[in-house]
Image (cartoon, rainbow, N blue to C red; front, side, top):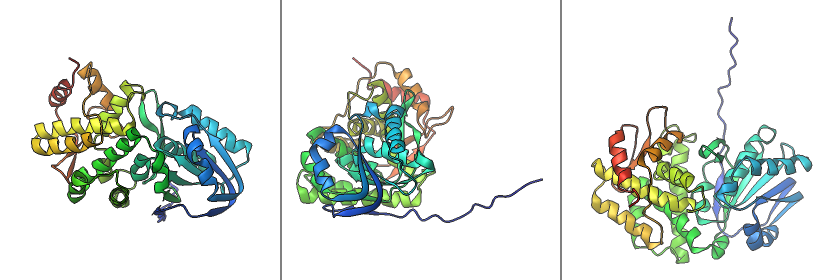
Length: 349
C-alpha cells in the first residue's frame, strides 16, 4: 500500500540586488537588526536613519569568524523568542559574511523559516556572501558544515559602508572578485589586471560585474548541484587553512587567495593552466597585498582534512580548477599522489 504526496511546484524566490545609497524603508512588522559591535559602532546610526518598523530591535553578537557557531545562533534565537517574533517578522543581516551567514541560517530555522534582508558592509559580503542564499555556521569539523539554502528577500549594497573598511578587509573582498573573474569571465579579469579598485568608479563597476556573474551562476544552479560549485574555486584549500589556523590568522578572502594559488599549481601540473596565467593571477592578488603562500607542516594531515569539504565524498576529493583564465573544471579525478606533491611545495622549510 502506498500513499503519494504530490509536492511538485514552482517556487519563485526571485529578488533584487540594489547597488546604491540606501533609501528609507519601513516595515509594518517586528524587525531585528543582527550585527556586531564593530559594525554597530561605525554604521548603526546611519542605518537607523534609513530603517523604521512597527517594532525594531538590535541584536549584537561577537565579532569574528570564531563566533560563527551554534552559541551565537542560540543567542539570536533566544532574543527572537523573548520578543515574540512570528512568521511575519523580518531579520536584517547588517555586517560582513559572518553576520550574513548566521542571520540567514537563523531565518531559515526560526519557526521553520522567516524572511530576512542582507545589508552587507564589507566588500567580500557585498560581492559574494550576501548573494545566493547560502547560509550556515562552523563547527569543530570545519567551515559552513551546518546550514541551509535560504534566499533573502533583497540585498541592499550601499557603497557608503566601504568608506571605513580596513585595507585587509578590502583585499579580502578583492580576492572573491578575482575568483569570479577567473572562473567565469575572462574580460572581467582583464579589467581587473589594469584597474585600480581603490578608485570609486572602478570599484563600483567591479562590484556590479561580480554580483552579476554570481547571480547568473545561482540562477542556473541554486542548490549547488552542479556549476555553482565552481564558485568554490580556492575554497577547498582555504577552508583547511582556516581550520588549521583556527580562523584567527587569515580573513576568509585572504585564505581564498592562498587557496587559488594552490589550485592554480594543481591546474598547471595537470596542463589546465599555463604558468604565465598562474603568474598573472598571483600579480593581481599581490597588488592588493593578499597572501599567496602558506607553510604546511604535514601534507598528509592537510590532505585528510579535504574529506570534510561538502563537495567531497568518502573516498574522493572534489577540486575546482581553472581552465586557463575564464574557464573552470570541477573534478574528482585528481590522484592523491599529485595532490600531495602540490601540498609538499608549500611545506614548512
